[in-house]
Length: 433
Image (cartoon, rainbow, N blue to C red):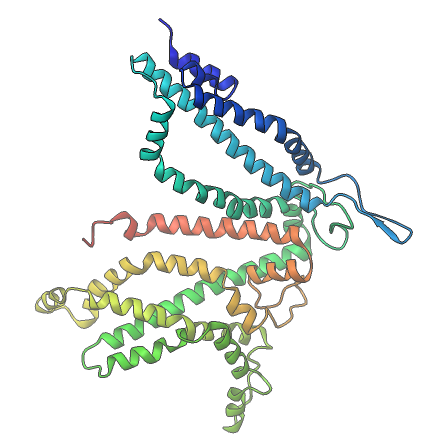
């Protein structure tokens, strides 16, 4: 007895559509065959050229002949084109897999004595069952080219020598260098010292920015929800005002307030006989100012969130604890705090990741300054993301910026996954129901 599933699978593997024709689904088979012929005839040569460009990044450099410039290969364009064709190739492999799976599925149905669908019946099935997939297909295409393409391009740059002044297209070619940029980052003193210093401050900044805003928000939420507080809505509105103003405007205002020479804060200090403080020109005070300003902008979010959580706590829990003789402090640490942490822990982790890449606060308030002579292209308050900005837009060190980006992703992803796996909110989803 013949196995239609086996034969149709092998035929579809050899050439798209042959399995469908074997299963007597002639129209579907012809369409698959036409698709493969079209790809082979019209796209095989461009695909081969794109793969050549992706692997070599070009071989002909730009030349100047007299007053004319003879263009050469543009390595970055070749790389992008190669990645686009690579993604298209993967999508084609996916379609090829669907072709094989379809032929096998119909072959299995024939082995069970069922009749294969005609083309009209196939269209009817697609209209009924495949409609959601048809709607989802554009999102797959857009994700491939708007998300995966930049991601692959960014990763690929880390393995090249794409940097100024000697390897910037179109004047010069870019070459694949493997892990050399990673090695340079950790072995060369200038890069190593800058990376470790900036990385250390980034970790400290992310922790301080997250913890200070979280506990300040908790303090205000407890105060606003305590008995005897009057005009509660008024106080909440006042504290939420920083969120009503565009952040960059507020940060620029803060920058003027903390200006060491002309800022009103130092003028008030001098008016009462105190010395002015170099808020933004001294490394320690610049970092201190960043944390303080960040508290002002960050705590209203936690205050509002925690106020909502506290409002939803069953009052009977507190009454029962009070009857049992629990003090206000015990009721806070045994009832309020666990419930608040249960509801806010995932957001706390996301806040940490957000502060790790809090470019706006750093760049708009201090621009990474003051200057640190021990660093390469970074100031005393630069975090990794603002250092990347300077490496790319100011210094054209694209390969090094790409390496740092990859390391940021690894650090944030590792910390986030580890914390999410340990968070009770994800382990005990039914606890609060």
